[in-house]
Length: 166
Image (cartoon, rainbow, N blue to C red):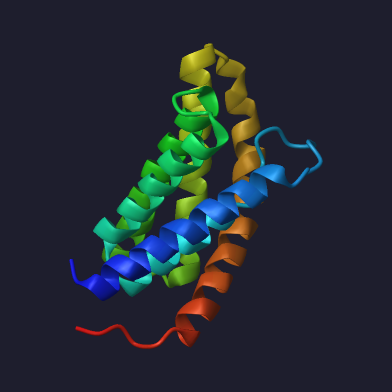
């Protein structure tokens, strides 16, 4: 890995951790259990469109692990929710970007939807709360606009970044 790319990845990871920690401290009204804005996913999308899937997945997983270490929640339920969501969102965004004609907005919606589905699945498996599936449609409906908003922010940032070297 070139030094420039390594430094940019470190900055992306730091920004993603910061966004995740800020989002965790924002008190959202709990009308919908489990709803989050997904600000850190904006950084993942920037990594995907600036570099590749491997870099995005690395940024996402490092964000989850390091943020959990900073908050003292490594291997607790919030870690597993975040970990499963990050993996599934990374796979969905990569698949959407690689194999469909979707724009960055479609990629954002796919990532958001996959994240929600993974988190509901983890809750259902760990707590054996099968009725949690009833919340899934509501979370998907709220996840789609947030996925579009996150993609919009990522697109704005990508337009302003200098061209990558090599």
